[in-house]
Length: 116
Image 1 (spheres, rainbow, N blue to C red):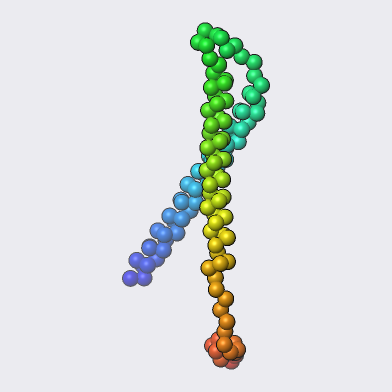
Image 2: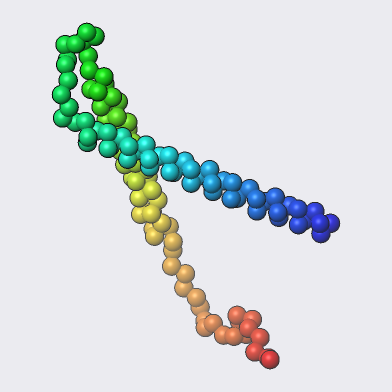
């Protein structure tokens, strides 16, 4: 019986670090994609190209458009999450009602033992 409890605790403890590693890797990928997209946009924003080439379009312009669309959608998602989370934090103090205690807190009421 005790051994089953230990195994359950060990299994639960091993699952947490795996979730943290996955969450951390998703955050790292998200941040790196955002930074690399912004770097690409800033470095290629004033490029020279031949718009009337053999195909008639510039690959760098297409990549810039894609990167700008990605950054715009990330910014919109970030703003939406900021508004949602901000709404939760604004509502938090409103929900808490003040609790007025009648009487005093004594050691007996708090069940504190004073014997050594």
